[in-house]
Length: 445
Ligand SMILES: Cc1cc2nc3c(=O)[nH]c(=O)nc-3n(C[C@H](O)[C@H](O)[C@H](O)COP(=O)(O)OP(=O)(O)OC[C@H]3O[C@@H](n4cnc5c(N)ncnc54)[C@H](O)[C@@H]3O)c2cc1C
Image 1 (cartoon, protein in one colour):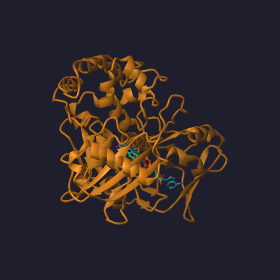
Image 2 (cartoon, rainbow, N blue to C red):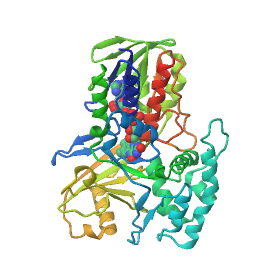
Image 3 (tube, rainbow, N blue to C red):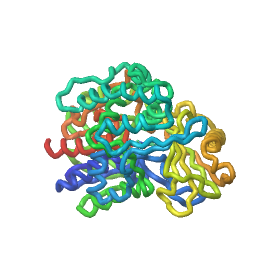
Image 4 (spheres, rainbow, N blue to C red):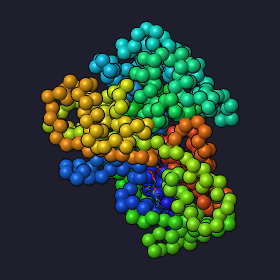
């Protein structure tokens, strides 16, 4: 093997696929029995359905993710809207739909919001005040740019207020969007990373803001196709093997897992921030500052409530539920097709919910749905489950430790994972970009 990669989520698998494409022989070691990390699925105990660990949404601007999916022949496992269109059911039960027309960005957003009957006129006009910060955020993406669309100590909420966004527009558009992208309440998450997300969503291509939904359970959508790709080209992917990287001074010595040892000088760690300190064995003082920052990084939870009804209750693949504890609901017919009547309700930035009992979470999700969707009222709830991901993402609050770069002070050790300094929040796209960066660093070392 030329390279060992530890961790088989989006980051590890995208690094492995890129290296394989370039002719390297890779060994991927994954601790769990299934692939996919924080984006995976498991069989529901009663229905046997493969249930995701939480609904995942992709955006048209996930350019590296789509390149990865194309490479492994899995782009057909995702359905991308022609342009951004989203129905938001407000707290009064109205269902206005925001549609961004096929105009050059950011005119498509401005035109969509100006035409959105969820809003009064003052709210609609206030969107125009986002044009300048969006332009600055776009400029900040250019190489060598120093433009700052938001200051690092500012929260998303303060940034939106300071840019004149009305409470109604914040509640109906920005808050659900920011919660989905950042997995943290807008009063806590720092604004610069949200400005970066908006710059990528509302950039050159009008389809960059469009929403894409997986049409397969998550591990089948990308992780198993990635495994097939790697193994068909001489690489190997092993599950159920918790690895340790042995290093000494400033060099990698070997990787140990499941009683075996690989003496290897090139390793990519693609584990999350909370798993890195346990992965490294040996005396490596130069890595201590990185390990220390990884230990100090805080996490933000997500909660998913899955509800099965005795009939179909939704007429769209997903709708937004602004102003509620569960901000989005997805109809899993997108994945299972036909007669499925399984909904997934998602609570992002779920610190206030994650410690509640399952019954309380299910009651909350059901009540919010009854309130928002009249078609649920005559339906019988036949099954419900709760999935908690206490460390779904890393915190984006101002003052969190700096994110590490791909290269480390240890020769032959590279870092990947959504938490590497990609400038993006903890998303699939950040994970895949970090994987591609690590593969590039290995190839050019
Ligand atoms: C419920 C939920 C919903 C989400 N929704 C979205 C969304 O809609 N859109 C979006 O873009 N992002 C979303 N995310 C975020 C996204 O899932 C993550 O950013 C991404 O999957 C991270 O990938 P990764 O490869 O960096 O890390 P991980 O997926 O965490 O993979 C790391 C892997 O390393 C393994 N590992 C750890 N230690 C070892 C060891 N010692 N030896 C071997 N293996 C080890 C772990 O078991 C794991 O499989 C969501 C996350 C969650 C939890």
